[in-house]
Image 1 (cartoon, rainbow, N blue to C red):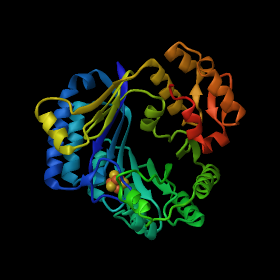
Image 2: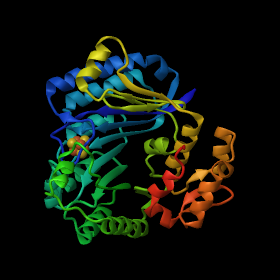
Image 3: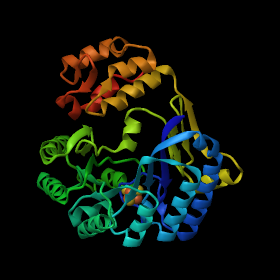
Length: 379
Ligand code: SF4
């Protein structure tokens, strides 16, 4: 029996953040009802596959799943419980945003088997939260964290962002210090990316936003590398920090390039050979399901070269890197012979390290990971 990670995309938010290019729409009760009906149909279409599969992680992402009402959350979890049997030891995560949770919603999550909460903190200064277009203030981070702990959750992630417009190194240090003091089990840090089509992208084009230069961006990343490990947060992936045993198992599925099924508008899936994506339009997602078809818009059968390349690029994101024997077993090819030229070059540049067992990014490679990844793209 195969094992997979299951991702459920809940595409609703209180309102759109200025930098966001995720598939998300402003919350509307009638749209949530339609979405739940669509999801039910999509789950029906995958019934057979789910019956033959062991689900060892479930991730409710978004969007903001926690902006659903308690009743809607209850309906969502009931749907999932009917169709997918999670293993008793499964990691079940829900993304929540400060200010959108209540003791009742958290109780609902707990009763449904949710055991990990990922909180979209982003920053702890109101000026930055406001500029990002977030709906919460820093005080609500503390209140939400208290509620989550009172509800009995023992596995909490904080999502943080750096390289924000106008953000100083000192402010980033304060965000890290205050986060460490609160003591979530997991911390994710991402630098702000100006995605085409977002308000931030347009404002930067129009010269309305000043952004940290590359040097400051790197200094902020380096600060996280300097501050988090001594506080007990081991870096296990480029952007992820946690004590041993508290790594996000769902995300490890992606980095190990293992199969996952994504449901909901815009969700992506991969079965080990083929990857596909759902329609991002909620209207089309629903109408396709109404006609009894899966709402897939892009499907690509991976060549062996692409599969190998993605396994390397994703695996290098982790600090443990690629297990050479595992690679050999999966592809019947020796990693170091397959990419001999690229590996030689990157090792000489001090970006990559080879041991008899593994291939990993060096400390310098971590800072310039994209330069490394490019070398492993198929020609
Ligand atoms: S809360 Fe997250 S998904 Fe929703 S609009 Fe903001 S960044 Fe996008």
